[in-house]
Image (cartoon, rainbow, N blue to C red):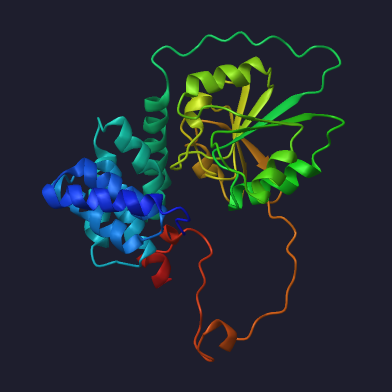
Length: 335
């Protein structure tokens, strides 16, 4: 990823200067690592986050980011150490809220049981919930008004989530329902972002860093069903749902397994991906699609390029992982 205005390179220069003064300042290291990560400089990010873990093995954010960077690089030399640290944090009875948030996503890249992931999700969701959840009184839908369905998303850049959602939103029957979109990321002016936002009957930015205010806005819009697609990811919208923004709240697609939140009523899934022995561990009621819950837009078929054009050997077997690299780890590779 490029840095067109050079602003992040300037930040790196200042942070590296601060690091030279105090090499063990974890706050400087974490900021530096985050910038490296945003620029997809995984080698640099891995070195910085690994250093923070060496200084503080209980630093959950650094640990999660080090695992992410290591898997992105297929750096498996410390994989067992990083995995054991993550699992030890997951088994702690009183991990910090920040540790919970990091663990619940990072554990999915590990060969661990769903029960452990579901437990981490419940603890993470509990840490998001406000001390005194709002006692909202949702008035019934006025006669004649179509049901209002809201979708909340942390970004509208060219990413798999909005890319998949856009044709779905466009295909919904607007004669029967109103479809409102909510975003927590400002300043996205790309053509794709504009086209995605235009697919909704109405699109509104809400303050993701102020989930209580975002929830008030959505509740004030009288949304009947709020659909979250972010789950326990780095740009989660779940804190907005934790403030009960709508009378019915649903999760699916982007994270796709249990959120562990009592404030999420339904999980969109299917019985192949979520068989009964796993579904019993979920905090949500299941909405089981008859085939697959995973939506895929129509694909424009193009001629297959030659191996030479892709700089691939003519006879080698090629493995392609088109997901985030963290899902490509030793156990999967060994299979």
